[in-house]
Image (cartoon, rainbow, N blue to C red; front, side, top):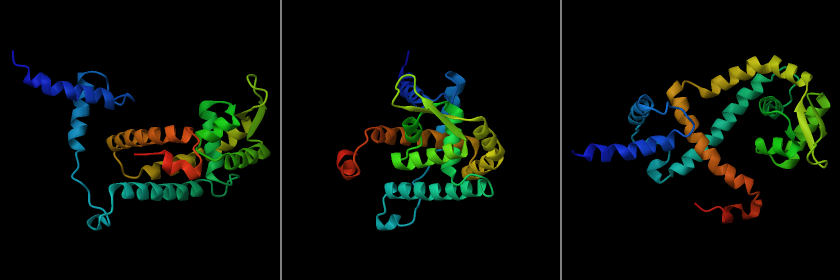
Length: 213
């Protein structure tokens, strides 16, 4: 029996299992075939970008595009809360976080949203003042306060969810479903990389020296 074909397929199966940790494909032959088809269809020739001929790096392009996407998303979020009682997009993001994951400490809520403590506390204080969240002592640590969304917070969030969902659909643009899955995988991988660094709480003045690529 010849094993050349098997030798070529085994590395592909290993790569399929590594890429499929989030369960985007069925873990069987049909899922594997779909993965192979998508890999083939999404093989791209190196794209052209502004400044490439002058030595601009792909890392520079990625960083710029992420910054621009953040600004685009903020403009849609601002439109989504126009005329409502929300002052900033962070307020409804904090409420969505609490609705999705349940009560948590103030610092857990702040860290989930990648904010500095002072910024996060200001947002929480505004939500408390509005009556959209409430707090109580933690049973595990009396020094900590547990934050949870109130019925009023749920109501005001639900009233705005139509506009918020509309804004998120616009951010996804004209990507196909397959492209969205690919982008989610890539952004998740990138986010996981940065989350590890963020969790180390490295001082700003030491950050670039501590993080080596």
